Image 1 (cartoon, rainbow, N blue to C red):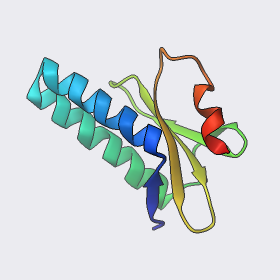
Image 2: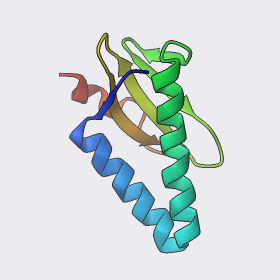
Image 3: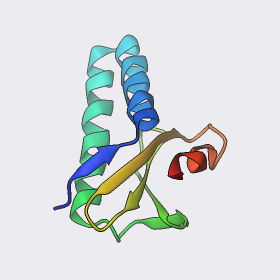
Length: 98
């Protein structure tokens, strides 16, 4: 299983979203946190399995939360570049690849 690392902006998105859901309900915030970490574990286990959306970026998501994990499968790690809300402009995270 590959190690993973968040882009700083992706980590901020994750924290912001978890706090948003926790403000609605602590249980909901915990469910969101667990759901994102489950996605991360699935990506770490089978990084090539998920859809390529804009090479070299791939995306993995699962409802009920409207957020996708956008990542790059690097030889030595999974680099998470966004915890992207579905309502946000697609591809806003592309500048993070530089």
